[in-house]
Length: 398
Ligand SMILES: *Cc1c(COP(=O)(O)O)cnc(C)c1O
Image (cartoon, rainbow, N blue to C red):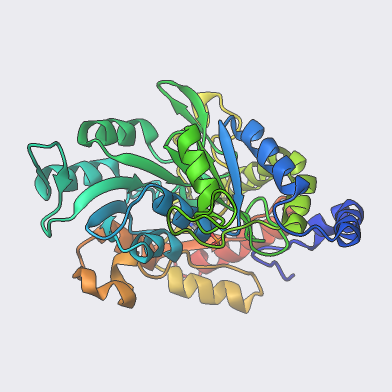
């Protein structure tokens, strides 16, 4: 039995009719960019996430860029983030001319470790008389960019305390966590509403996927929302008057229309992903594999929140990762490595001067993690086939 890592065809089949109708209407209207469907989508996401403002943009990468640009982060500034994320998280910091500072992760959740972050700020930074925090190279530390990796929220209360103490802005990378909830001391909150801004991606393979590139920014403050709106159109306000340099970060009507059709199903899809994760946990546990494989942590499971995890990926860990992956490939079972290299070890960031062993938990995760098939329509039989194959792998090794 072939089991792909991700299969979007069934979802399309179920929604083909309304999706095609929308696209036909857009072609008939010839209104392609920032029209009524983008506005409707922004309203719906703001409502869904309980966010003040939502601004549709062209991708998750551009959401990050637009926020950093709108906050005026640039040369001479540093932004601290996790070393274990998709490349865009670190790259956008560098693209605006600022310096990314990579921090190690928590070994159970793979998210930015608040302890490691605090240690960096306490031990490797200085606080000037003006309250500004500077790193050893003299960059002003401006912001923290946590990533809610694989669909699980970061420890936002701990990060918030650190951000307050060091007067840093929190920008959330929500590309993998739309709808995920965090049971904070201040009450439950959705990912993207805990920092000054949240950056979303609707890349086709994300939990809410467009038919191309698309993204969105949520934010609390009206003034920042206005700046981001201007930023997505080259910093223009009004037409042809430019106060600062932005980019072409516009969202188009076809993507927005597709996302409008899909958004009402998101919670049901997230529930289906959690059900898949539950089957994996039960079956791995039943076969005595829960000890040999580190299964995903669910720190918020008992919080009473429905979307305590939205399982963008189901990631297990074993020191025999590479052999296991080869074994699964031979059995036609899809898997993926997110990510094979920490951001601090990417060649394009060599100038930052990180070396092997600097961020040991990130490096260990890069060697040991493996993402297994997960999507709302994944059948139980297919899942059991995956578990069987993994059980066979370990039983052959005693
Ligand atoms: C997908 C992703 C992005 C980038 O989003 P795009 O829409 O592909 O530009 C950024 N950060 C993380 C963590 C992602 O997973």
